[in-house]
Image (cartoon, rainbow, N blue to C red; front, side):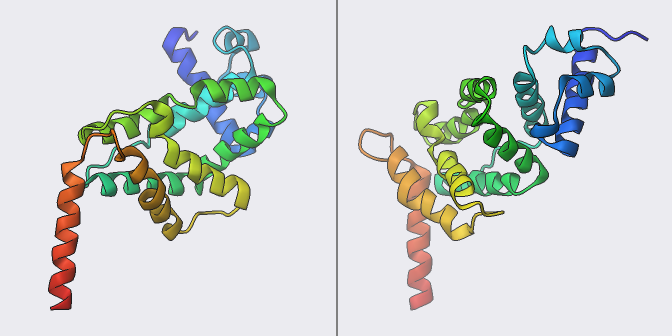
Length: 206
């Protein structure tokens, strides 16, 4: 049967995802995706202007299925859980695809433009939701500072994963002071969590 609309689009995205998982962004071509999806290149170009747009869309669709917003009961716990999840993601096969996209952007102006246009879309929503529960409203750029710092660790150090103590440092020394600093709404859950921790330490020392 001839596929149309959403059915065909999902078939193309699935084919592109399979290509990314097998060959990375470097091996992604419109020809191979069209062949795997059982369609022609025109069907791809009607939806995505180039392989960069298709590659980013395929990755975003694949990553979205694994997104879970934590609710630990404290702002610190939530943002640390988000950052740990991102660290695990970057260390996974999906993270390898993302690193390939970022690496390819250096020599591909079209890919760079697509990545920049989507940089504050999907990911920022999760962080803003977590901050919103604490009564804090910030721009997408501020909301995703922690992710930017994590990305920098992968790019500059080339490590397969980032040590947990670095994640804690990012959250405690940079992110929380930024979003809860002067002019930001206070987070009652952070204050309560700190009181609980202080009480626990007093009991342990008694």
